[in-house]
Image 1 (cartoon, rainbow, N blue to C red):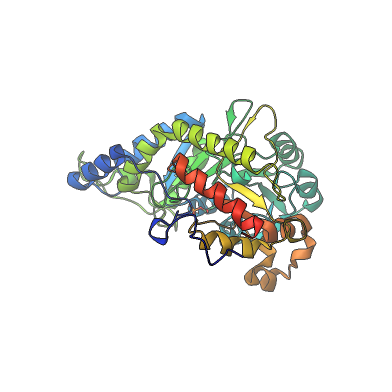
Image 2: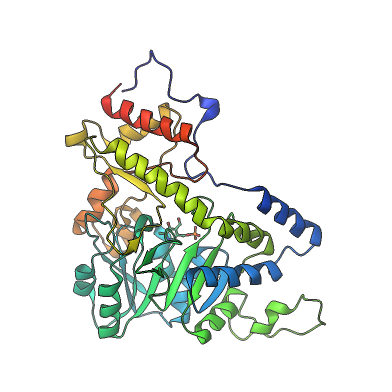
Length: 394
Ligand SMILES: Cc1ncc(COP(=O)(O)O)c(C=O)c1O
């Protein structure tokens, strides 16, 4: 318990917000330019952002959408995943990974994680494959690449679609190849706390042009591809609705932010990498578990720095640790409680968290520390002081 006698590490007015985005002057100017142009909806800035992002990750085709959730849902539909199909994903992820499968009408099947790397365990995936399995949906958790050699091998051997949830993993690579380009689809998030943010936003990188085209059509009401250009200044054209789609398009206003965020992505990664190394150095002697080392030949996107707090070893529960950090006026997060611990999934699928023990344990012990590129050295110093004090019961 924090002592009532001393001051917190930071004042309440100076609360350190978890995942605060870094917003530069360039994107502020671009947003203003967008507002002044009168063109706020899907237009030239979205097209430019798609081109730049595709070139950054080295993908074949890129379609910007309103969120990663939309990207996942549209990938499922483009892959013809539907009722009667099963999709295998991880029990340790954000709810929308699983919801996207359900939105497509398919049944999610959960595989447990490797307890060290926290990514889906390929052996557990293999054990879940049935004649109804249609796709595998791994998540590069916290920005650490999954074992794509094993997962692509499984997908090929069993004829399965591979959709990568890259919400945390924009900069992550294996042998110089970006995550999102191993599978048939890579889905990215530009939510405010992400490594690149557009407020809300997402992107699908697809290997096959016809799949990318279908995603474009489904992402804008099911209007034919040309409908994306219907407000351009090269003349009036009718649009045609060719199937029942969704309202999942990205706006130029969002792309205005993304274009400049993308230009700084490597500089921001370097800053987070430096904070990550500092945390590793400063916390190595504490009675908590730190993220596993990064495998040689891979690049971690450094999206979440987690501490695993086992009460029997640390002398404090994860939730009391979080309360302690809050009293120090430092924002922390939980990513995530395991999927089967949520009532909706338990009720609908009869899942019990104990059946995925590694995900259950991690979900009960994990806490994410601030890791935004916006943090200056004083902020990082405050996080370190607070973690040490709270763990020491000071
Ligand atoms: C692993 C994972 N998948 C999917 C999503 C959904 O992203 P979005 O908020 O852009 O829909 C998130 C967002 O937090 C996430 O962390």
